[in-house]
Image (cartoon, rainbow, N blue to C red; front, side, top):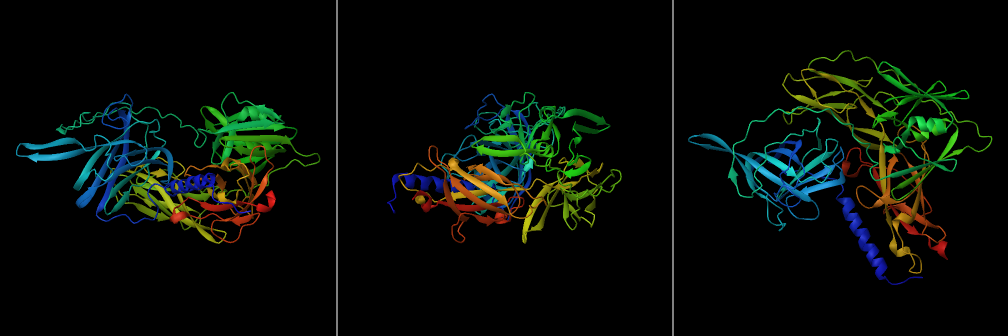
Amino acid sequence: MMKGYGKRKQMAGYSLLLAGCLAFNGIAGAFGETQPEGIKIKEFSLLDTGSDVVGAADFTPEGKKDGHFKLQLHLNQKTTINAVVLRSTDDYGKDNYQGVWRTNRVTTGWLLGIVQDKTVTTGSGTTHERIIVNPGFRKDIKEPVGQFEGDLTFDLYASDNGTIKETQSYVLEIETPQGTVFSKPIKYKQPMTSGETPAPSPSPVTSPAPVPSPTPVPTPTPVPAPAQGSHDLEIRVFFKGTELHFDEMAPVLKDGRTLVPFRQLFETLGFKVDWVEEGNVRKAIGKKNGQSIELTIDSTTAMVNGKAVALDVPAQIMGGRTMVPLRFVSESSGYEVGFSSSGQVWTIHIEEAAPGTPVPVPSPSPTPAPIPSVGEVEPYVVKGFLRNAHGDPLPGVTINADNMLFSDSNLAAVTDEKGFYRIELAQLPTTWSMTTTFTKEYNGKEQRFFLRSDVDQPFAGSTGAIRHFTLKGVVGHIEIHPDFWSFDDNLPMFEMKDLEVTLTPVGLLFDGSGGETITTMADVLPTGGHGVDKIPLGRYKISAAWKPEGHAPMPMLVRVTGKGKFGPSVEFDFHNPLGAPSIFVNEIDAKLDSQSVN
């Protein structure tokens, strides 16, 4: 029965519209957008967190160390800068909502303080003036930061909000009447310095000050970064109905896989454990009743009953503890693993397999071809291999060596039939970093990928380096758009957290595996909106059910957004929005099946 648009539905519609707007703005610096000519970012880098210069909204110290960035900008002609925005992002420039700093009070964010280093030449010589450009927020969004021309050097100070750290990536946006210029994502490449750096006077009054010579600061030992993707996530693990409490270290999520402490998991599953170190090779080994599982730290190849098996995520040392993939170890031991989620709580059940079920031994992946030796490190040469997760070479891919001193002076080489590349570097006193962007076909579609080298650290050209690349852990997300007008006013209020989604693989996944069925509740996506995140790249059949508290589950009808008719299920692939590499998404419409409530 049709009903008028109630206030409840109108509010739900407004909320959905807002969520859509947030999702649209989820990528810092729209990929594929043509940037205005005559405006060029020559350098954008994070220097340190050694100064307390700005507060949340003005140029007043607040007792916390700010993020100190350097910006070198070239403007061909006098140009008005309307606003400057600093965003925290992932390594590919996609917002991760850890922090936004602005010069103009547009929406939310902290102050981005700007200090210009201006060279002044007089009859008595050359001096430098440090001019505070942005002493506080421009509260009128129409008021520009200022007009500038030529080659400019700025110090940027981002008010500390607890997320400025060396593991974080950042993108800078410079908004002008001609368009917006976006920097490449940058990340601090060395341990943060703790010493004070020269800072301007907190007074907003312009005053000249000579630039002191920099003082060398000793580099501290780097601290291991915490596992990514698990900051607000609670993971609960049950073995035969009893919850396991991991005292040494809580379970963490890494590249879509759950890792738990090695010894407690193996002993819970009945294994006798052993730890072996052979030179630089460290192994966690479990044995019971003729079964054996051998995991080598940082290796994507495990040994199960003497057979080589590929891993999505290797065993690894985290926080001084050996962490191993829970599902892989459990299923290799003959147990069944179930998964469910609600909001930020994930629940994993490890249960005995049904009586008579043979102990599953994972089908061994093709034994990866051993990586040919690349020889010793050579001065002014970088070389290595590009492989997939199974160790197969990827030929015909362009590898880029990024000169970190000069812009537009990168070097490149193409991988041969064995996935090998070699680049002879210019003999300059500079450092280099390694990346690649390429396309690969899956299910008849070209997908774009962006990779940094496995060892993502810059190196001096004079020493040379060996840098390998591995294509692995490729995941995407779906955003779900519910039709609020399909819900009768007599039913409970619809909330996305009550929407259960089931994803069943259709054919082999991108990585060549059979995948597994995923059943989970819709949740807030990092890019805004609601849906399911961290889905291994592949083709899936999706179905959904609405499960409001105190009411029997009701099936939903679904379709790929804007395509075809609604049905109980629909198959979909992922795609790259706006040509963005390594960002794989799709959108699904969902509405209540009216027959289910009659």
